[in-house]
Image 1: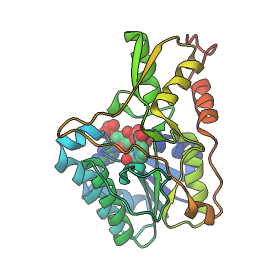
Image 2 (image 1 turned 90 degrees about the vertical axis):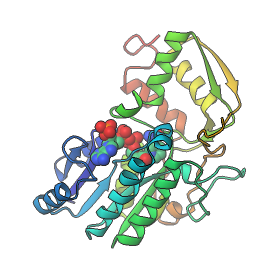
Image 3 (image 1 turned 60 degrees about the vertical axis):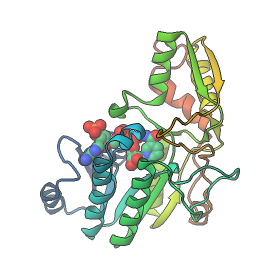
Length: 287
Ligand SMILES: NC(=O)c1ccc[n+]([C@@H]2O[C@H](COP(=O)([O-])OP(=O)(O)OC[C@H]3O[C@@H](n4cnc5c(N)ncnc54)[C@H](OP(=O)(O)O)[C@@H]3O)[C@@H](O)[C@H]2O)c1
């Protein structure tokens, strides 16, 4: 496989690069802006990839509300341009395409109902990738954290919560939004398995099990040995604020039908991540 990875240096892209090693060339945002058509022309000409992984996105959910045109350019128009180039495209999307108002997990065939600019643009990006591409795989995932990347958010959720706990001595965390937080090392392996299995269309790939952000935060603090009070709170959406899905849990009937392996349960993956990142108790003096 000769792969081109866009959004290089990000959480998922870094893991894909590591797994594909010499079979992949990754371009960081600085090296290649996916909105720059002539730069993409050059990269496609020089590398002649068999497959393109688009890990680039504008995914700061609150910023997307403020910078709608930029969100549309990166998450939709650039994706349409990539799909049009005729090289199989692997495009990454999000559980936020669903409104999360029902109790059951959402399968790949369930009707999306995006309720933020970010989610709207990600859904439109999926449609552009599928409609304009000759062979597209759209992978929806959730709550990503990884060993590198997520610079635009000031680190991943685990790092941000640990920093906040140490600065503030207490945390407030929503207990009514549920999801499957997913380690990008596991997601990258699952994405490659799907590509090698010839997967196309939409598949859901997330960690096993499910938890609330409150439970996820509790697990992070326990594993790091940080003694902090965490107050569970309900989601409050201010006027004009971003509506995040309460039930962000994905089911995967299509991924199962394709015979794809399940990812590890979220807590097992979190423990592994924290150990590898030196954040777990007894590793690098996390407490
Ligand atoms: N993070 C999550 O919780 C989450 C959940 C579900 C789905 N997803 C999706 O998963 C994918 C990967 O997310 P991630 O967590 O790996 O993100 P990440 O660590 O932030 O990586 C994204 C990379 O894309 C780059 N980028 C942004 N705009 C670009 C552009 N115009 N051209 C080229 N590169 C650009 C970013 O660079 P800069 O930082 O320099 O801008 C960053 O390096 C995205 O499609 C995202 O929507 C993420």
